[in-house]
Image (cartoon, rainbow, N blue to C red; front, top):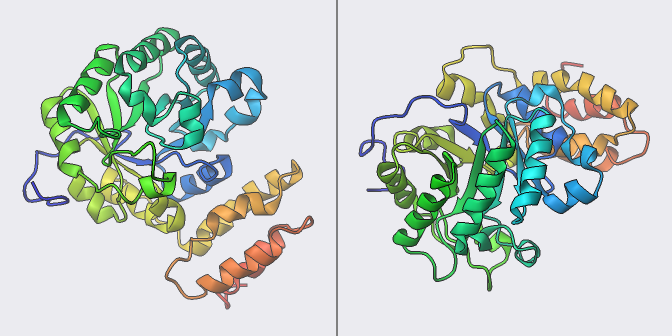
Length: 338
């Protein structure tokens, strides 16, 4: 079955809240980023950066868990492998009003492996199942798992099926599957997102073999047209770097994937809609750069994109930077508006 071929497909699945998801990305998808993305799409399912159980249990949990109510639907992604601790943190997520809690079984970084969580847990499906079972006992919100299709030499389809079946038997109904294997040694996290080949057919086959499960495909998706083709085979699509580096593509999501015909904001309108949030956050002591760094790709491929990025990068970091910096940067893209 050729990748991305919409003519050789399963019947399209019933619409899910997770039809289109934005991937959890460390240092990127913080609460400011998620608020900005929500301005561009009302329906995209948002995910936090991965938060470790240790950070929540032993650190300032409010700092990690706070979010803007506008972000719904939004899920908290957890990193950990201790079933009791994961259950405690899942309950925190539910108490804070998150719509889902997701267990990271896909990150290949050395730091994650040393903590015995992330992709290395694919070698321990029984432990992942125990974690999921304990989390589900603790909360009523969905508990989902994000994984790879395999790791190192444990990359056969039979091993992937054993992992999915074992974890599903513990109560997980939704699997977000990055359609690449992960090499836990020899490749950096960045290389693990690019070097192992994408195997969409493997994820499509999971949906055939587990029709009762919700299967979300992650990896290599860069356009909404590509997402539409993939959705002929699985229940949802998760987009990562492209949604961050070219965020305006999110304005296509609601109409094309959810059938919502609300007016689409122009790029300049999206920035103007962000201004009240900026004002509120500056009043709380947030630096302008912490918010605006997530918007640098908004004018990707458009007139004035370079000036927009340059002005924000040069002036947004200053201690007194405020909304005036944003409006000045916008003049590079729409010089006659202000």
